[in-house]
Image (cartoon, rainbow, N blue to C red):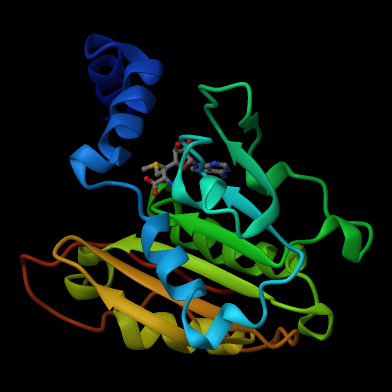
Length: 222
Ligand SMILES: C[S@@+](CC[C@H](N)C(=O)[O-])C[C@H]1O[C@@H](n2cnc3c(N)ncnc32)[C@H](O)[C@@H]1O
């Protein structure tokens, strides 16, 4: 199966063509850049007082010209991607990024838009969420916020996952939802982190919704 997918990617122009097509999908003409929603939320009354001297980490960055980088809110945006196509995006696997040694190496905001669904297994997706908490600044030191975007079918049409399950996992990791928006094809969340990640409870894969038309998307914490 993997061989077949690799062959198809090659036939369509390889990973560079894929990244380039995804980047073009983000241009405003194509209605793409999800960080527009993030910036709209950050400019609301809930956040506008907290925006002094804030930095951001964009995981899975396709363009340094996205709204998150051009809005002028962040003093600094660190951009990483597994397959960087731009000198301003560091080629790096977030799961391999060295853990911060102190607060100065952490971020006020992490953006993770349409990335978790890219991660191969439910277990690795859960590990990625846990790892994000290690990169967020303590809420005592200002804004400590996570922007998440997933394809809507991940929470609206999965056999093993839905929004309630996602919010239960996020709550367990110390996150509280401040904004949510459901578009036709994608769902957006903004979460504040309280600095306290729980441990002990497990979120295994279990069937929540039955039906042959359901997909198998899932995030587990073990
Ligand atoms: C569908 S694109 C989405 C990009 C963009 N954030 C958006 O919202 O349109 C997913 C990107 O996530 C990147 N990605 C997936 N897993 C990653 C990881 N572990 N570390 C860094 N980037 C990752 C992929 O290389 C890909 O470019």
